Length: 504
Image (cartoon, rainbow, N blue to C red):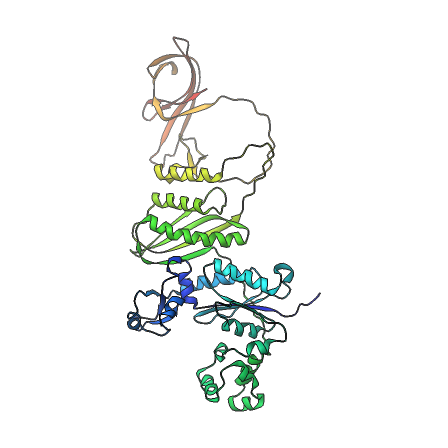
């Protein structure tokens, strides 16, 4: 087994709290935004975007100081959304290697990817880095990528990159020269260490690497040896991979309560784009989508839509959610929403050269959703017989697509079709020796020629729906020769005759 030389790609996203909150809000990307952390009145800026930094705003400013700047959008920090965004980025990194280590620090996302031996899959390291950045941008975030054979070198260089030059690949053996121009801030020094190096006039990693090792350790202790090795690109690392979790979930906290459904669907549109993008990257489709609304009243409102087949058609999902929320609107204004999806395999259909094109399953789903909006969920589905002899002994279940199995067709004899009458129609019956002799149905009199029955059924004495009936199958003829084949029910408890079905 050939062992590939070590090679690491470091993905670094600065101002992570701001990026996590703004990635699903494209309308705020061109506006100055700051993220406040802490409890009032001690709130301070913990993260900000490029537009806010251009106005002269810095971290640590209070709410009073931010109010002096015009048109600055202030959003509270959300640990839940940050954790979800971190999981999404780790999942994205896991697409390039199963060995990913999370090195995130407060205020920034940082992970290292072991890409040794991936050249045959993703090409040279430059191509892998560009592909990784393209996927991160598609998720609505910006980042930098550094590649090096030394773990800590890749991390330090990624911290020193700017958005204008977001990719750098360091060749093996050139770690020290690549680290030399970087500021000491990429090493995350303690306040005491930073103060000492400032007094000595040491500002870059090249200056730190040029110091004599023994004299440096004698003055600053063993921790200085680690810093010296970092500056020279010689510090080794024991890789500690994590298992990225694949979850199709998106969250968003709204700036103000939303009551209009159209405004809510505008937000859902952006979230669905991300869910579909992430599912498509794994060659999957969305099988169901659950929308959970956090209401101003303090409760939640959750709805789930599940079409017949998994699909990645965004407009189709929006239409289903729209119709479902119209039929089941939330009882209060909406403060936040969560979209969770279940993944399924993409549908594959093989058409013959001369076979007619089948109708799209999505059309049936939209039609059923429209019908549910009119008649209600409980009145749409497929009829399933119950284990009872009672009339109308069935219930409705949602439509499902059965698995494709080979079914051997057998020849069956033709039988008469039974047309159920709903509701059952009253009928007048004349008896002779306890058998039907004639009947009047729909203002026409019939003489019974053949009668079959009675079949007596009764049951459910423990319920209010107690029933006891006689069922008769009759063949009758009118005076003009019209033949009637029918099924009658004699309700013994109410002494009523009803026509329940006709035989064709």
